[in-house]
Length: 183
Image (tube, rainbow, N blue to C red; front, top):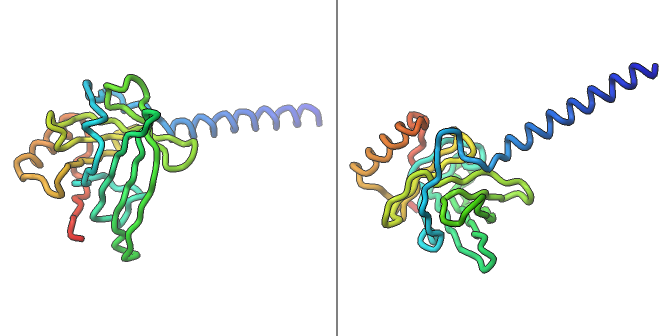
């Protein structure tokens, strides 16, 4: 009986360790392998409203259109994040407020964002217009991609350029959802 209890406890410890590792991997704040955040990066210039032009599908944005994000630099150096979009299934506006922190130097576009207390996910600006008119953002892996712009639409030539750039980075552009802005 004592040996079976010991075996059971060892299995529980292994299972607990695996669960913690899976949770930490799911909340990764590092950029995907082979991708680098832009540097130099100026959060003061980046703050303000950005419109979501395209994204990869995830449950937290499913059925959302007219999506925007507003970034506000706070006195403590953190960034308030306000995501807003129209849920076309529920026919209502939704909003989520979060907090972003730099994962390293504040002149590198690599942050971690949380909308759920202590759980953070990566937010990495991997391409950025010199005038801060558009940006390409990835999460902790290549399954997260957003193309953002200061305007609700992109010029077709610029859109094609960004698609090529995303493809060159190994991002799955064939799965992009193009976000309409009609409201």
